Image 1 (cartoon, rainbow, N blue to C red):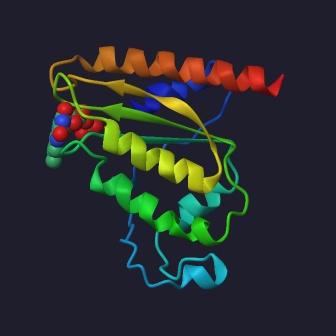
Image 2 (image 1 turned 135 degrees about the vertical axis):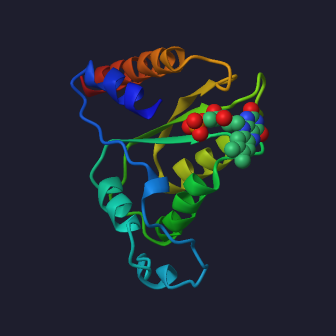
Length: 164
Ligand SMILES: Cc1cc2nc3c(=O)[nH]c(=O)nc-3n(C[C@H](O)[C@H](O)[C@H](O)COP(=O)(O)O)c2cc1C
């Protein structure tokens, strides 16, 4: 889903990077409050990659499967570690969007969208919307990829026209 979306962006010559936090070393936010002093997290792990990328990109796309009608705990862990931006905004992407997949015929996306939008608002990015694909447990991978590719092209077109 993510890689197909990136290919859709590439149609408009928009370079992107795809990260899979499940394969990264990312600890939970402990709510220690140290970021309230200087806007920096005092945990040293792979979140540094996200902090750096976040400060240098124009579009942030959050992606998650729906787990128990919410985001995966993996993406939630990443979002929680951005508590730093509550205290210091710094440079951030101008835009944000999301990709969601649910295995069932009518997944409940509400909580996930609410969390993603809260994150976007805190980061002061403009929320562009989301693609939600239900029934992925039954769908062929090619069909999911095609939908995601199409959405990547749409978002790319929107960003491209914004740059004119
Ligand atoms: C722990 C867990 C909870 C899930 N909860 C839901 C759910 O509430 N609604 C739903 O439609 N699918 C649910 N699913 C199915 C996943 O959303 C679906 O398999 C997903 O689209 C697979 O994406 P992936 O291949 O990227 O993991 C759940 C799957 C797991 C593992």
